[in-house]
Image (cartoon, rainbow, N blue to C red; front, top):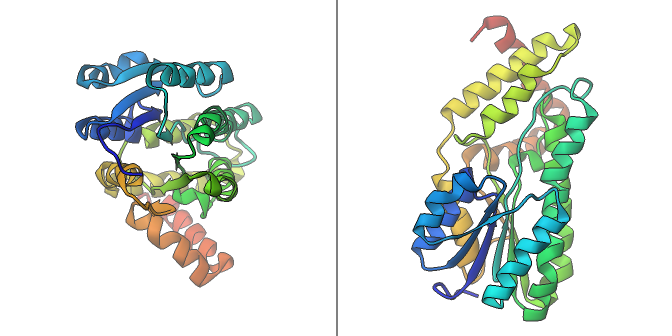
Length: 281
């Protein structure tokens, strides 16, 4: 599977964050990289390094299909695909509008589905390929305040698990990347929804505690380097792992959830969040 300098890679969601980082890293390794995203202006640095830049909106099946067909027409193959587009949007289950929930699903879940369905016919005909999906520690742990977002990542975990079984006999690998709280632009977008949402007074203390908990976590979180390195390894390794948990919280929180059980684990979180709300820390 490892044949750097000849493999063709599509990175969806390459305009910022992990996508931009992995596209740059693979360019340095000699891969043919197609960087795709909605904001072409934010991918000009990648273009200057040699990436082919595609405008792609994962909420539009025609846009995704056109981008994939352009790659196949030019290269005749597509070896690795990063289904990396996604965003966070926080708030209480009652408070977040269903319009916003549908938008999260359209990007985070159906967007991945559109990419997968567009590339699989080509990978099946090649009898080889690698699909790398960016999920989250929220695929396994859902705390109060991020329920809708976590549900999209739970959905991705189910999709990836089934997809891996469906395509293994075709020479296609499915790899999942699960970061925790990392310092990118992600947190500002996710917390902005929380701040703009009108929450009933009954939730105010919990919202405040959740916001302070997340702000402190992101402030202490690592940069994107370790996650980008894992994403590169997922494409370049002969036998990649099925799942890469790239941060300390991504590795420990699911383990603690299993060890303590849900009632105690989430009870500790709620007590902590309420304490943060009352202390002002």
